[in-house]
Image 1 (tube, each protein chain N blue to C red):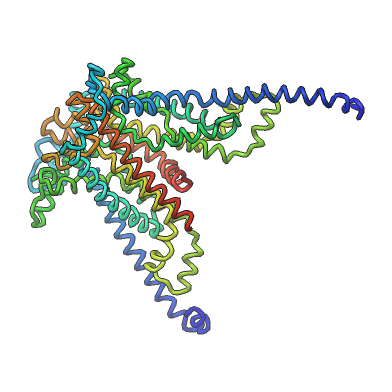
Image 2 (image 1 turned 135 degrees about the vertical axis):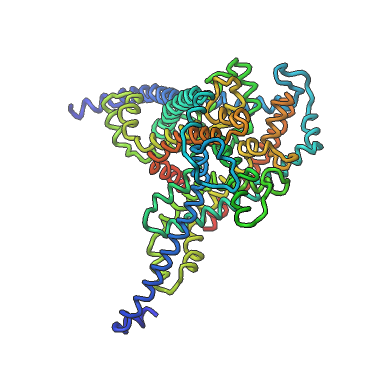
Length: 313
Length: 293
């Protein structure tokens, strides 16, 4: 093509490409949305819509099966703030979270620290400590109720065999929550453990070499290298752990049914019972909402903490 | 200290043996501690296995013993014959397989679009979806049940399949992976006139083996183990999944501990096998998303 013809055609070509780019812009928008659409529909229907529906239901005297009966305004919310069952389940949930979170983080760290040190058969230890995590809650609880059994249960049987007193793991109000925490630690510590182990293996070995040349022992290295280097992972684990612990339900419901005397009943179980055994789904939705806001505040608070930490770093 | 020992070469020889010995002792002690911990960790599973292989009459002996006059598979036979276990297996496999396939497809499609198609509003949309991570699913059981009721889906497979497909986390895993694939690959294909769908299916997906594996394994294990959703949605014994069915076992078997443990073992074995096969992918999947996130 000669120079001349290019110059002649230039304006027309530009207009054409503009036209073309406008239609291709639309095409891109449509294709892009089309790819997202299946996800978006399911997301909207089964994650967002329940939130909206729940909020609406919480303002009604809404009964399971009969639907909405009458508008109550904030009455459900007023009721729950003076409801002793609500506050006791909230306290139980917080108690479980405060007990289980440090155990699940410190134990995970210790296990990872040990496994990271032992060279032979590392994968085997990793597999063993992680394995319980893949079991379903029902399997775990079947096994642990059997372990906690008075008399011929393995734990109490062993205690009496070595001359100690039996513990009423599931029937003593002071012990039941500890029994739940113990089971939960065994079941889920593997997740945090794997995160810590991966984090430890990413710490450059030069740091340790330099420290040992300077005469730092294992403990000093752990204190001044390992723990600070794992700062970000620790925050992540803390956030995930708190959110998971606040939502505890399955293992408690199956192990103790929230007993003895409601001493272990968590928030989700109270929501479940209000909705599905008392059929008061409006009231149950109000509890869900208050609890939802609480979890949101806690996780946003933690996120803010992390971003501050990152800015400082 | 280091300069000192370098200077006195003759003496370092004898001195060096000391720290090495110390290091070996520390290593040995660590290993012993680890072995004890590992045995302790395996104890509940081993005890369940042991109990399930005892004759029923020997499960409640005092003092507690690991031995038995004769080990037997009787409890497994009885459990499989008298409970609905096989049906629950079928339900669990079917629903978990559908959820897994749908999750891989739907979330990779969305992630492909967010990663590679510059459509208007995609950032806003992406953050809206990502914010969904903050919504604690367990809390939504009551409105979700009401919704399923009005859709007429309670006690059907759909009631547990549909809510478990759109997972913001899994979408995010794919997005992270796709962002790491070089752009040139797709540009030349688009230049040749291939449609986006073809690029996705014929170039992207075959390249995404590791991401697909991670998402698929996780989705499968999580949906297989999900308790609360099938627990509220499925009421008929024939519709139950393994976790929900097993929760009814304790009461229905009474005090037949060998049978209860046999059903616990039967319920746990499939996921343990999946885990043993895909150990590396599972662990790396957790570590990978965790370290990046």
